[in-house]
Length: 116
Image (cartoon, rainbow, N blue to C red; front, side, top):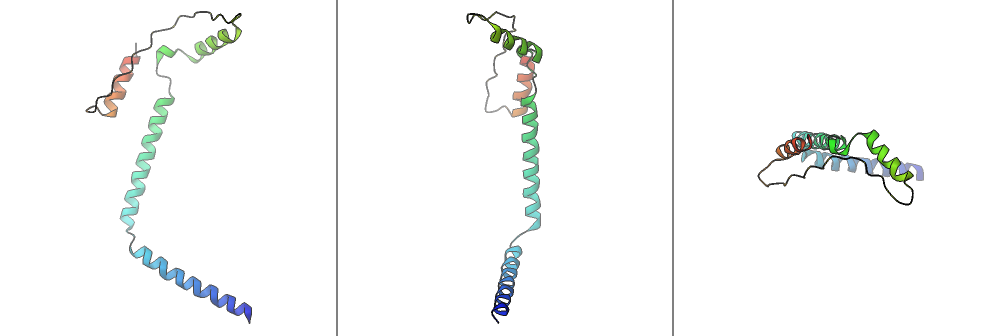
């Protein structure tokens, strides 16, 4: 008898849940959801592009990976704390951001500045 009461209670709860879900879905517009998901995907792609751009070593002033590893090795092998000077290029100035400039203009001006 108790088992039937538990089953009956579970079924009643499922019916109530269905009614609540129907009410909630009536207020939900699938076009709005798709627009929001598209916006989220666009933003995610843009963030990935920024991450990829920042991950690239486009600054020739930094040198190649081999040069950087060589400098690190020189520092680690230096005796008496003396670091051997190695020739380096001058680091370009970081461009100042104007409120009127958009991000693409800023990135292209910086890319031109580092291409010495």
